[in-house]
Length: 312
Image (cartoon, rainbow, N blue to C red; front, side, top):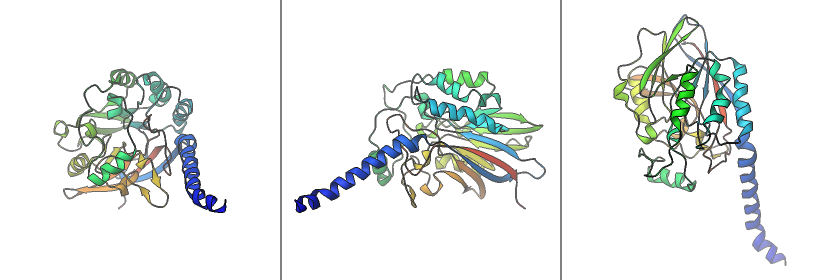
């Protein structure tokens, strides 16, 4: 009997620990919403601080009431403006719930780009493939459009709702917001993850007549970061990575689902290209693909960025 316990005790213990970890990752951490606060010394001298709320990767599935209430509560922060860096949907029927969740935030000025999950519904996929693709040097969809027959999400309804609220669409285009007498210019790209980015349509650098300029993109592929940085954008905002989603404590993310290195999978960092350096903020997002509704050592988040004057 003692030998049988020794033989089966360790595997059963490992299985129990794995099951407990899965319950935690899906039942608790994936719904443990956090607000991160980050200060970015990036504004020209003389500008007052600007408070920017970045929301990303909501991946709304119908019935996610806690997520909706949490997103609605963020309006209490009263940001100067909101930036939505895409992947709002993980459900064909989720548009009304996204617009309801973001309704209070749409009372503030805002701008947005879309991600691949806004355009196409997700498919069941083995999470282990992400690790295999890292070994193979691939990155998620690896820049390819979804397969023929992919489910079409009603992104047009989402766009119409954002536009009706006055949010500025940045799909391979430029836009501006007036904030307390300042003109904030934005240059945005469609999602590089499915090769919808067209930087040639917006090349040329920041709007010199604006007080400050920001580059916005869903997936932080290096070609997009290089282009923004070489053109002299002081700040780039992105999402897509989910912060790695399944991380190892005291180690960090294993994958980024793009060609960005794991050291910059989430949070504030810098990017250098063409002799220029930009600040880069990558949001870990507040949702998950509906078929992999787990997070571990990487809680869902939104970020309040306070932009202040450059040092020196």
